[in-house]
Image (cartoon, rainbow, N blue to C red):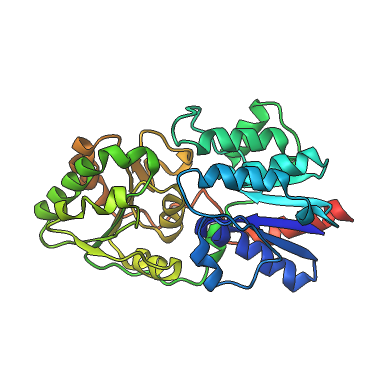
Length: 330
């Protein structure tokens, strides 16, 4: 029996195709919800195990400590799957390691080689690599990164987030979709919002739409966006629908960078570094400072060649993962 762990919306979106594929094959699994995005529970099948944590400034510390001390979730479990680079994924991998339970790491091998960017994700993903038995890499370069670090049991499977997009039809409107939310960007939010607003003024024929992240450190600056349509947070399906029909996207999200590439949408990545370097120049471009946004927005106006192949997967990652799991377990 494998335990599949998630606690945030992005994690759930990426493990869902794997769970659906396992269900279709009759592979037994249990689920462990680690509690970061509590509202997620309203929209999903009840997890086998749920971590009950309170609120407060030390909530993440409580989640990590609770996972390490939780015994019942590992009863009858012979392997664990964690996704990505959250602190709860690291804590679950560490707890499994202490019990000598092998760990499958989904989305393994992403690297910026700067432990503070993204923070704390870069540390978490490196630590999970040290704990994992099986490394499910989204791209060839992720696999090569782990090979260079001396790891074995490396498998290129693509990114499961793309499995959700196979049937999506694309079009092009005058919408520029914008998302800014990363923790390391919080002090720079006023400058980024000002730069985005100036681009909306510069291109009055385009409609800039920003689904506003609920973090108070972000919402308090929304009045800067006088020429941008600020909307409430979108569900993942609503966001994908908007992404599939936009002209281009401005974001600091690595996941959106992958989704945009699969859907053929130019993507301006507002970060100092990206662990998804494969698409740079063809599908995306780095924008390291608000002052550089004008130049990179000009790049984003050019459509992506229809002959370009998305480097992040083909939309069938869950199948490859379950094929591998069945082979290992047989």
